[in-house]
Image 1 (tube, rainbow, N blue to C red):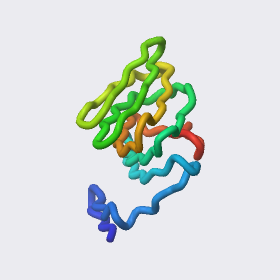
Image 2 (image 1 turned 60 degrees about the horizontal axis):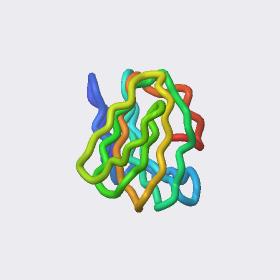
Image 3 (image 1 turned 180 degrees about the vertical axis):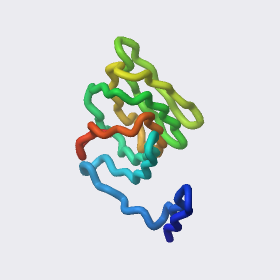
Image 4 (image 1 turned 60 degrees about the vertical axis):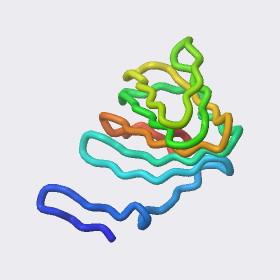
Length: 117
């Protein structure tokens, strides 16, 4: 159930639609005026192609393992780790295992097409 407050919003996470992006990627999204919170499910082998955006991005991996390429550096992040990707920095991600993560973007990504996370 969603509740609108005079100066805010309360959303029941289970009531949000799970958006299927591809056979390997799905997500749930909540946006405010200045930030966007995204729950991402990536099946092993899912690839988010190299891209960049105006938003700074924080990715918190709750479960699984991602191989990230941030600019020219390649790293692996796993359960319990958070990675910060600065604004306008090129990056890509590959799920090395089934992965459950949260992304926080600020400002809100108004440029995001439906096939990219």
